[in-house]
Length: 172
Image (cartoon, rainbow, N blue to C red; front, side, top):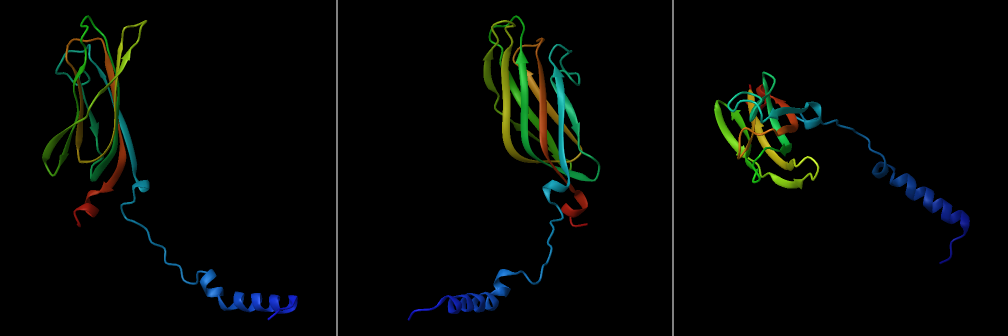
């Protein structure tokens, strides 16, 4: 069977009219998530100075504060660390975050990676970069401890994630 041009156009038009509901969305229901990460992004960092007296805030540990009434979901942890001093075997003995949920504190450890030594300054570079999923309320303690103290090195520990209202988490 051979179809002329007018018959072909008529067929295309008829098929197009019959299938219009499949091509066009008629009813739209907008759905939103109450705890969508993009609604409450959070990031913070803490700087550490290993030359300060051990055991003082800002020496080998620092605090990050989660806003009241919120739970932080930490999705990424990173740290840039440099070590110096008279010890030739400097390394990071501990890199961690201590988080608290419902009054229970847990310490999470991260693996530091040696990045090499700068030939001019003799600083040893170390980094941490870890995708994770941790939860925190209140205060987070970020800790980086070199194996030798005092040390003239320093560190910057950063976290990123998102905040969720605790009332939504606990169903209140």
